[in-house]
View 1: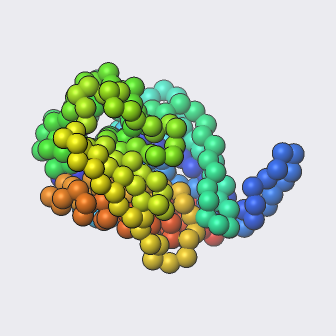
View 2 (view 1 turned 45 degrees about the vertical axis):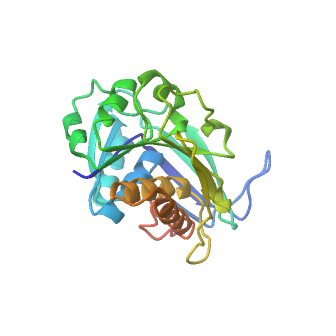
Length: 277
């Protein structure tokens, strides 16, 4: 196993609408579909497409949507290693506007893998690179066995409690939920990457070096912004795992994020036809 993702799944219903509904109004979707999505799921699928294989450590609900999520990701080539929890599968609903902007409502608690789950944690010691999206402290410590560990600052509390060295911390310069300040994690991450969407982003390293990169150019019409950031993260994890230097890896990741804008939904794998699920 060369690449792995630790994270969660949301079964997401997508609806392409002419505009977001105002309070009390009704809008009619032009297209609607559903698929297994969420940050961990999107990144795992994209790593499969780049690397040829990837393992996804997660947790799934003990219900029909949990089973459909596993089947959906398996069909897309992901090796799914999942614990089962006694709760409904987390769900989401996404409105996609004509501009491609997405607005997401999430239903249920995020459920990532736990170190106590009976999953093949020992395999992570053989991984070239692991992307940590969500999970508990022990799961994160298991992920640290990989040669390279990339983590999102969305799980800052877990990163802080675990006390392991993060090779690359990926956050946002715009999203408050992904803010990171020096000192939030001990030991300090070796590199902190802050994205700014189409404006690119900046990076800084523990030794004082800094830099920036430009946003990628979409290779076609913008359809849907869903999963663009998660595709960037997968691209960065892949490129660094393959041994590329950080500036080249960031350019590669920016191109993957821009490509995601031209796909429908989480994976762009299926046509979004009326009534399809």
